Image 1 (cartoon, rainbow over the protein chains, first blue to last red):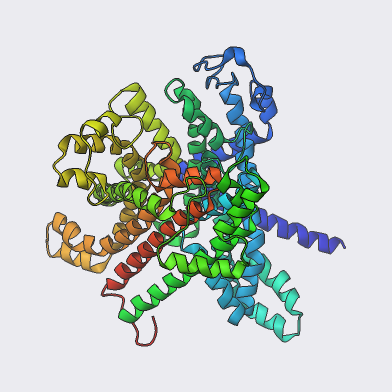
Image 2: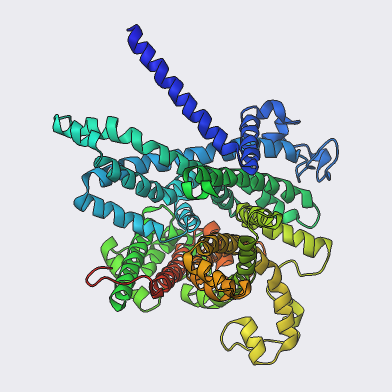
Length: 298
Length: 341
């Protein structure tokens, strides 16, 4: 028993060391480092939104009509909106929504993609052909367009927006998983396992699956920015979150009406989207640089 | 080569067929009560029943589907549930306005993005290069609708230089009416020599074009930079440099040829993205194109209109993909193996 535990500890230590090396490589680039810190800060903001925001009640929708359309000041750093709510607080609560829905969307896309990718890559033949042709159709269009069309059929709500974006995104992951499965299927350890008569499902789930995960996770983290943008765009055209949810895209959509009088109303929430998406994209670039040996040399 | 093109066209038609069918079945599954909308909110049961018969909703699904396919082949997208006008007619009015924006923004993105990318690559790892890279990542990280609003705030409400919304001044529309020849407003105003209107059209188009351009610009300059860097490492470039050929000629005559192919491909794709972005930003600028049209239809659940715009966007996108593929195929370095693709 204690021997097993030792092996586990050694394995864990090795994993952590590898992770540390990876993070060190990643943070070599200053921009990536800044992006990484920003994302950590954003996550902290999202988790502790009720404690960080100056007016947590207003962040969640409480109206304060006496102070409507206040320009940015020390009391309201980002100003207030048409119902007198503190925009900074709304934006902070929006961080929560954006990070949560983009994570759910990507997980949902992976849930769709994983079985299909495994099946297509491992089984091959007709099944593979059918799944790949379906992904072809999806990959022929920009994800935003697919998401808009699906969301407009499903009806406007945040849940439907999440479903729509996940449906637009899964083919990318299916492709990656399939390619990964196909290359691992041919590895000697899988062949050996096959020879000693291991069950097909055991091979698939405990030998192949764990080895497909890391490229998918990398791709997913690079997609976070794109998913956040898509979700905000859907909310902006009225196909996502509904009032009084403090979703960034929705806030800007409402702010559009008051563009002549209150510039701060649309400026700051948009700036927040920009910073978030930029950080994720820069981090994604950093990932790519670390994993692509050609760029690492440069 | 021809075999390749025919194959690609066949795939395109197949994809279009899938889109046509899924949008049809989607629109029938979703509980939207089109008959109810057709006659209005205060209709009686009989009126709704009559509308169902008028719209053909009483027939079985497969015969509706066949009729739908037949109508599409004739260019008939059905009637808009809200405006009671043929969708094809409304699309015909809206499409040129959108294409004007997309085409101009892509051309400008290419004209500006290419030199920036080249300059970045030549001056690799200088401040300009880092700045250029940062801007090109930054530009694709900005929500387009926000870019639109910020441009409006800066150039319209604060500086008062450009009009806030619309395609053309309403008063000018009455004093100097524009004759419709091609449907493309700018082109028409040039043909008829209506310069006052032309100037007004340009002023109105600047902000939407800048907005649409930003994404393609980032993409083009990034692509140009990374491909040129690869090309500049190749032996033939080193050889021409060794011959003492001027650096300007090495880059703009020899290296650029191997960059253009990929960049044009990116451009074709970014035209597709610009088209989709009009869905989001046209409403901001009250631009009378298909983007505003689909935003309105989405809110009213006007399915014939949504399907109409979807099909138009799909066809354009498939064509753009085809163009991108053909450009790649034109590259003499890619030879087609007989029997394969």
